[in-house]
Image (cartoon, rainbow, N blue to C red; front, side, top):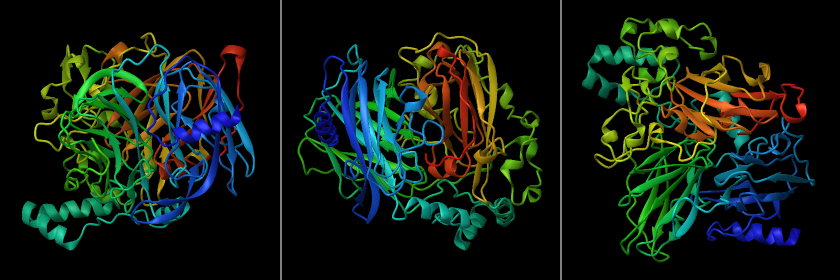
Length: 596
């Protein structure tokens, strides 16, 4: 049985195998964790991979199946495998020092858990920097009751940001110099251009404000100089998926990057978003979408012409792009768009673009330590009373981050609306990060568009609220929650059976993809009972985002920003769920954990 499982895992690792259908069964899968050579086309490096390959392994399960997965560590250091987004017992979640001790060199650890869901997920190491170094793969789960989406072909499109430096060196460099990898430092020529456009006084004031905060408007990506990959292939290596004109092609996008958000489009093709983080959503036709680190989106396209189409994924900072191709025949290529000009952070991304703060003395904010903002009274900041934003408090009268009221808003009608002209409510008004489709008048997916096709939980009021302020000190490269880094923090304690509202207040200038293990995060986007269910919630600078969680999984879980170097430097928490069936209770020692 193990041999069969190994052969199956290896074959499926090609990632191009059609989705197997059939009755649920128990099966055994074997994985090895190995040193591998990563070849991006730009550079080669020694990395970490599964089953001896640098290209991602794809595991395909069936909902209702009980899986056994043997993971053998062929490294000279401890490893682990976390099943990202899967709902499973906590001791199978694969996070060292929270779920289990990890897997020692030469050891085989056997995971056993039932598959309770369908959709697109992924797996990765949760030890050290093995995930940034290449230890990731994909999971595709066939639903028990048949696919709700019609398609003829099915491809995994797994994105990554391979860097020539190993993860531990990157972290060391960021600690020594947080802007070490920022290749877009502001220059004298930028100042001269700003002076010409804005006038000397405003340009000087702007430069002084950013300088006194020890930040730059170009601090959109912590990490630059990487090569984006699609299914392990760099832009010049051009991963290609085949189709016959007229076929419906399902593309399962997974962002397995360590640090990079991507804006994805396929020029010439409309994409219909059908699934977010493994859960079916009401179809949303879009021209482009932004995928946060660790998120998954399934889209369906229907190319009708006998020609090639480029899958184009630009990094949010516009420093690099991944490129793949959909084509009727191997070897065909389509034009590759140029990178768009990079955006710049604004005071809105610092949560400071408020009318009553025009006279604010930024000079008093030298070396601004976001971790010391515990006493910050958001309620006194006109236009920024996050407590009054009311996201989801009333699905019929929805208060959006720009302060506007949207009575009777029918979110179901977003698809195809002229929403592209409307500000994205999940970005601060005036944000330099707010995405716009490259195509004039094109539709960019927003969190506000996502509406669950079939809610997983009965709608009910949350029993309590927990506020999590996302904080950090850029100058010291320390990231934290509520001003406290992981090593110094007490676990978040939840009670089995309660419904908790998490209120994320992003006080930093970086975007953070927050990932709760073991339980779903129901994004409050104003759709009430049809709010989408996700495993990663992206929180943009200067915004407040609210989620709710049905606490239905006893044990202890990880809860963290999925940017690898943010999690490792402190934006991480242990969550302990007390009570539940069997009255499972866990002791909670806040041991540090690395990985993303």
